[in-house]
Image (cartoon, rainbow, N blue to C red; front, side, top):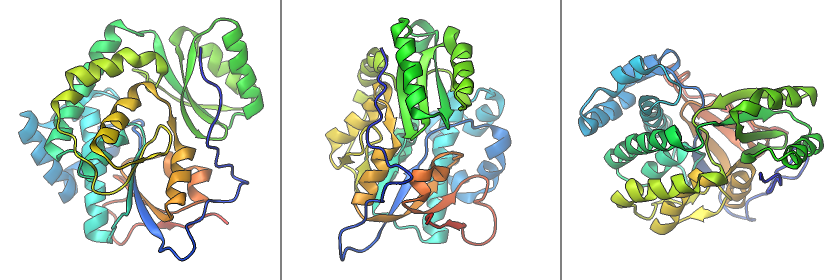
Length: 336
């Protein structure tokens, strides 16, 4: 059955974790998780941005086909080609943030799919290898979910009252319904994996609590039941690649620990299959390291807006929607 505990809360009313006395403030870069991503929203950036064009040229050479053309034709939100272009757009945004806006991060983080970009940015994987790995993992997951857990989806809900929401999950468990918490974004904001046949009832129950539904992911992600997928990905894909220790600290999205070795990086990349993401734990870890400024590089409609993000960091977003605008990116100062 599902886990319902919410660890590592960074409550909107709790004091932020400050940097050590006398320490210099630090900067972090976050590569966000993948939401809905299509050619209509990102195509102009991918075509016109010189950093994206350079990344695409390398990816095309590595894979032997035009990633942009296949992305344009694919249509599906989480297709292999959408994943590849999301990766490329995220790293291109970081290139622009460095070259144009002077970003020099001390800490690196990748949430969910953003781990792949983080691994490349931190030097644990060459860009050509992370491109190949992303394509191979997409095919690996597609093959796995064609026969296993084909009736499971991951659904995101927000603004749910916590006590009532956990009571709802307890009731689902008592009725023998399978579910798993796949993500804790902040108080009242969760990703839940469950059987698609129960999705409409779940959405209706969340609405009755006063909560809201965001979107549904197919295939599902980050559930403890997907241990076999983790083992398949490790044996068929991850094992082929030489993963190095990162050049700067990387924050694990599973529990906020600092990844500073090759083995820890390999474990983090595998944890994404069967461990929930916990953004409040990542925030706590970064503030504990003295991070005060956070660049969010890549398409993101969520992480840079969360209460626990804007309360703890000065947030600068560089993404396909704003990267081509003249002038520096807009700073979102920490909430009082």
